[in-house]
Amino acid sequence: MEPKVVRVGVYVGRFQPLTYAHLASIMHFFDKYDEFIILIGSHGLPEFNHDNGKPVNPKNPYNTAIRSQNIQEAVRDYMIENNMNLSLLKKLSIRGIHDSNHKSGYAPDKCNFSAWNADFHTKVCEVLESKYPTNYFQTWDSFDSHFDVYLCGCGKDAATQDYLNKIRLGSRATDDKKEIVGVNFLGHNYLLEDFIGPICISEESAQTVDATTIRALITSINAGEHNQMAELEKWVPAATIRVLQEHEKLIKIE
Image 1 (cartoon, rainbow, N blue to C red):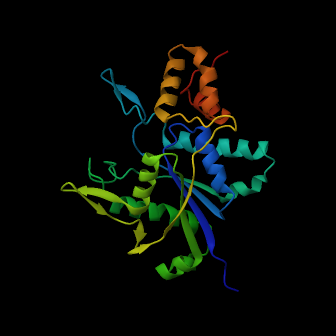
Image 2: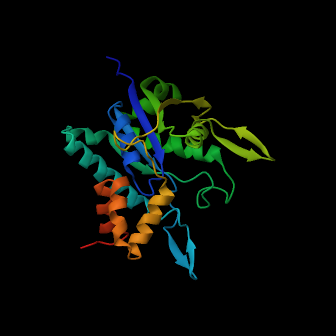
Image 3: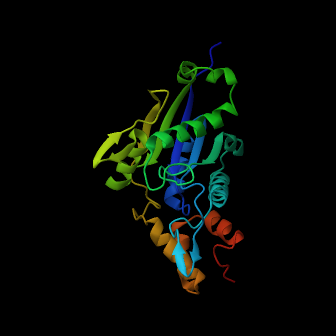
């Protein structure tokens, strides 16, 4: 009997840190797929630190391991709170992925979407090869006939939608011109789209907050403005606070 086509959802993000909006988007897609892969961007870049008194990489304060733990615990908490079957967690896989201009993987300061595309495909296949018979992957045709791979994301605004489209299509600047490089393997485009609309963190409010604001809140709390903790709790799940405190990235307030 021929195996059914496996529906695979792939969600790409930085999660610096994980917010309620991220979690809402993840859980919207989680239910729809046989396998759900989260690729954590900016993998391998150094954490935020200070070099000669100057901040280094303030947009990347948490390493991949911390962000992966944050996602896993937040998803688990959500499933427990909503009486979901925890055995479904086995379809969740998390991997890090380098940025397209990450100097340790690609040429410094140059977007190389061809390399990024190859990395994307490698990560997806790495997960699927660990769960499905290897004969699925002997040829592109066998992969193509057994798996439908969807790029999942929330197009909450024009900028986000543009970013998602760039992931799907790829683009890099070449002498002030943009060259489109599709996310593909051996010349085959294999990504389908699955986007959702704006994320609302509550039924009463359609407010969203950007990650820079969240990181600024965390910085202010660590600097002694403990009254900001209540504001932070509005935007991030309990798992985010718990994991950051466990790794001493967020001060514990007695």
